[in-house]
Length: 188
Length: 188
DNA sequence: GGCAACATTTTACAAATGTTAAAAAATGAT
DNA sequence: ATCATTTTTTAACATTTGTAAAATGTTGCC
Image 1 (cartoon, rainbow over the protein chains, first blue to last red):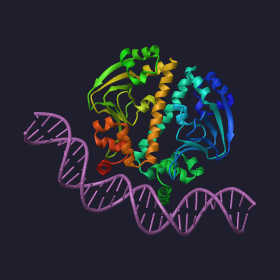
Image 2 (image 1 turned 90 degrees about the vertical axis):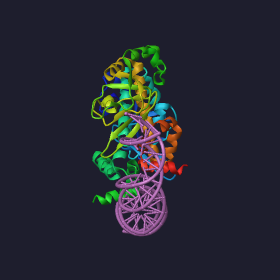
Image 3 (image 1 turned 45 degrees about the vertical axis):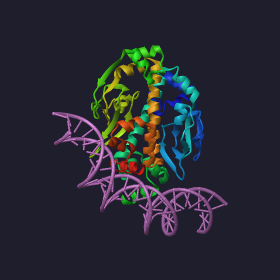
Image 4 (image 1 turned 180 degrees about the vertical axis):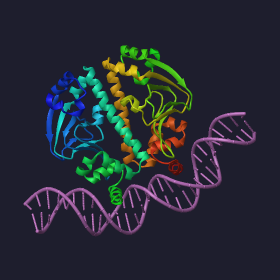
């Protein structure tokens, strides 16, 4: 387990000692494409790091699903409300490809946070990086039109464009699939 | 200083000992309405907690300012990119009223993070709470129309509606001021 | 291959929001 | 109180995006 974690980007800042502590509570799991890994309205007990594969987080609306997050290899993957507030959340997480994930029980992770200074700061940085990425998206929505957001997405996530259904990308970008289709047609 | 911090919500989870460590590097400052407390494109060396007053964070666009955050008494206030990445950021923070703030030098705060387990976890929770609030807003943009977002804002932040210019609230809600005006007219 | 299921694009029309400009209202300074 | 400045509202029109439904394209399975 230790040698697996060592090769995942997010664990690289950690000392060997901290990494061993995390490895001791980590487990490698595999799931198939289509698996719902986390359910909205449930308190989810696990924290995951995506080792290979692609995932999306989405919420169910009245007559639509909104995808608001994609994760690729190296991404951390958890139910925000379970992790942060120990409450059921609003997001489902679905694997879009067969995936391998590092699984850590939240209670184990929290226990390490409360014992281990370096791991606590590592957890702080995880939240901070997610925060800055989310804020960035909120601001982009204000300053950029849908066409520019699409172009940015293509440039920044070329893998996702190839491997993820456009209907998911449309809602991620904050437009309907029809609008995304129009944007793509205009760009040919 | 210690006795001031004790009465601010965000410090309440902390032990007396941790609070003293923070108090030792905290300073109370006052600034007038209109002060730009943090500038985009500068690495800002301070972290603030708003003791009294109101602040907004905004970015400058081509022919508009977009407000994307409001803080009231008890809010933490820092330049995301300075705090998280030690880089210049994209947000200006302006005080909308005369305000009193607790000021902590980032280097002091980071030093405490790297020494003090409880404070490191306190800092983790600050980032996590900001994260969940930001994600919530992104999702609300997808599921709720502008009129509903306005109604929610009125309910959740009655103080801000009274004390903040509508042009700032309009961009916070993701609409133009004209649209906000129409929404308000329809609600009479 | 051919069918079924699902994804994407296209079309026509409707609704929401943006833009610009001007009028009205509110605010602040003297 | 009055004037200048700023904020908010209103109006007319343009644009963008959404909705619904049909057409086309793609994928996987028997």
